[in-house]
Image (cartoon, rainbow, N blue to C red; front, top):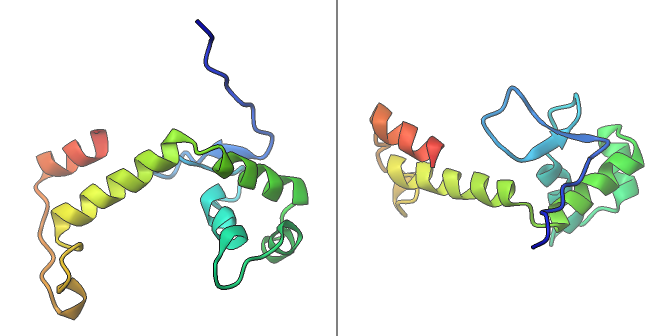
Length: 117
């Protein structure tokens, strides 16, 4: 049985001030997924060099963020799933929400279940 591989990232870390599990640029609070989104944009994709210049980051930091996201890390999937559960519980997934739908208050125990699952 093989051991799971772990990667040591030079520029990425989990942001201690965020409830998200996905990694961010060390000391900058810029999520790797944000940079990857700019790289993969269907409307206006940017090169790693353009992203690095736009965010005033080392090119290697941008390339590392892209590689991290391309590895399909489970923490990004978990963050998206948690966000979906929160939007569902609060009524934000209702098609009428943006046309004046009502936001539902989430009881503390439901909120805890969403963030702990």
